[in-house]
View 1: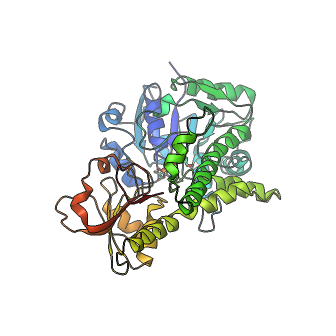
View 2: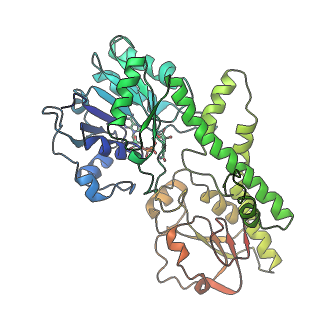
Length: 430
Ligand SMILES: NC(=O)c1ccc[n+]([C@@H]2O[C@H](COP(=O)([O-])OP(=O)(O)OC[C@H]3O[C@@H](n4cnc5c(N)ncnc54)[C@H](O)[C@@H]3O)[C@@H](O)[C@H]2O)c1
């Protein structure tokens, strides 16, 4: 029987699926400061929809499972419940502040938490996306200070970035090859073996923690830059009156052309992580040009989409001031309930700036959360809506929108604008 007793700190999109996976083989306590989240999980349901209820319920146990080393997941916000763990995995958020600077507060706070219960021989593995150096230069000193223990003598560290894609039911945590690393070569092997025991896709042991940190942050930066490039192409081809999607389809027939599509880049990974890398580069005296240009371009797309909608309305002689728009989708991506850092909001706000009246329908988003986060009233069902609109903007490619009969919401003269390029018929698309 394994001697690993695992505590997962932070039970969000990343932490919960990982805790569930480890719990199929190991005793696991999932710890979160959000009491409501703990209650919901202990009742066997996950509002992020990453885990189906029966999958979660199948691993839940009624008390801390460390005593008998039985496998299973116990969720708690009580520090006492994680004190007997010997592997701590930290999966807390790594946001940016309003100036797009990395905000390491959750990492500092969760390191303090772990520092209070850390014992000799324990391993602390970070999974949150960071710039190279955060684990060893920022988090370890907190662990040392709070615990009074010495790094790489009394306790050890690892870094293993998460690569999940929320809402993606195909690439679930166990099916994604996992990069691992450790603070010494021996600990690297221990960390790697631990993940290898549950990740069916296998693992890649990186030579150092900094290499593993850098690998993750460049994966998302690379995506951001590639999307920025096709967004720039969309702007150019719109001016040239050429259909960008048709161009991409034609170019995509070459074996090494990368299949990126234009769109809004929101969420808390691709739109945020490049700022982490940029910050570290700037600290070292290098001003990143491509990374920040990509960020600027992608951040401008909400405003651009709104201006294109308005242009199309004007071309069709539709009155803009006071016009009614049906916006389809507000989550940051398709088939996922996450509304944090969604760029659909940029489109809505920009349309409102043009004095358009916007109704947002999103069957995935929680209306209360949307109102709380953005002050926007959204509807989660379209049944019973009889209104006709001057423009319909498809902002998020939820599967429900593919079967929605848009004609019922159209006036004799209306605009359909398709941000995602998924509708068969539209007046204009990105
Ligand atoms: N969501 C993704 O698609 C994704 C994919 C790969 C990597 N990541 C990275 O993983 C990390 C976590 O992201 P997420 O989407 O799971 O975040 P999340 O916001 O969904 O979940 C984080 C959880 O941590 C909890 N938390 C915050 N501070 C805490 C503390 N001090 N102690 C204990 N719990 C605390 C929160 O209450 C929340 O439940 C981030 O660094 C993110 O960049 C996210």
